[in-house]
Image (tube, rainbow, N blue to C red; front, side, top):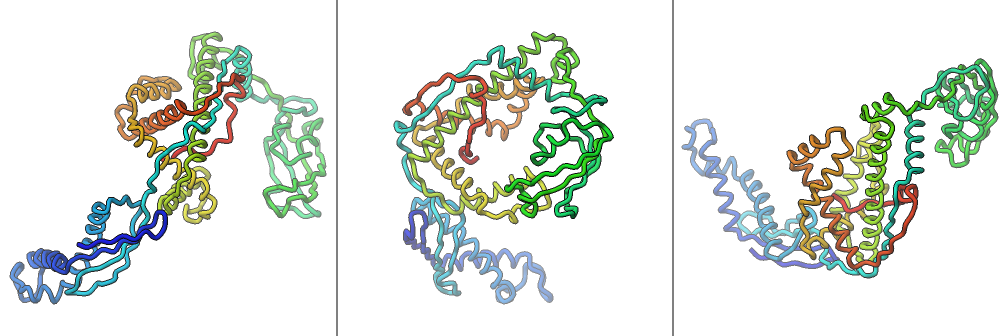
Length: 438
């Protein structure tokens, strides 16, 4: 077999492969012999059909099959021989594809980039630290109560935070428009659910009252046909319902799976959950900074095949997340290209750090992470057992731990500044892009 390789770009390789005719004929004959043993041809007993008849009937198909498999086999042999690492399937173009002649074809493909990760010392990291104070805990209890608010009908004027049951009809230039009318809608005043002026215009209304609201759609309204236009809504208030926050009692605690522990026990459980959230938030922010630093310090070309695969993955995720009667391939690729590129590049960089520093998942850390995740459930022991009985799920945890070890490796050499902040600031979501692709 003869092989020559041409570098047509930083990642693209054009490989010409020649396969001797003798090897082709050997493969063709092997298939014809197999066919002869089972072929049923009128006038001949099975296994007794002359090879000339077998060739006449089946050689073309046998040759096509042999050539296809030979291309696959010889391509693999060639990339191993040339020490190449393809990043996707090749595009094959036959040069000589005739009976009795050597097979010659061209395989064009991309390879994984070869690089060394560096620049750790130039990466600046701000590592936050915070505590869960009693005030933070009290605020969280208020949030939990508001999330479980109940509404009771009252005979008074509507106030902010009241829930109204309303019917409304909206018009623009005297004409009704799609989505502008509804009956029996529940609306909490001050929630910001409706366009500016709608909710504030209902403050002071009573059950049975009709109000006419003159409002204007925002210039950046999602429906461009309505953006910036003046509208009139005729609203009928069916009922006014005042919010009632639940008491911090055993019934309330039971909604969160906590029984017979009293207020102090509930506070302790909530604090534990807040501390877990705090640790995860701080860790995530450090990780995002490390990943940003690695990308900035290590420009890497991303193979097109990997980018295409990642775009397809993101399309599928988008459809699963948002639903709708749409196929993933109908979503424009350009919507996901930037995100896909980041994920692919990070995947390549993280894999190279793992290789350079010979990192392997530390099983103690794997167990710690499993236990940390399990602690959020009512029966943590069962969750831990489930992970260790599902190798695929456990391997996903190992991948997370391996990424954490990559972060630790960078932190040992990066410029790290510690900063004390409040709990709220520490857990506030950052503008965090994707980390390495799975």
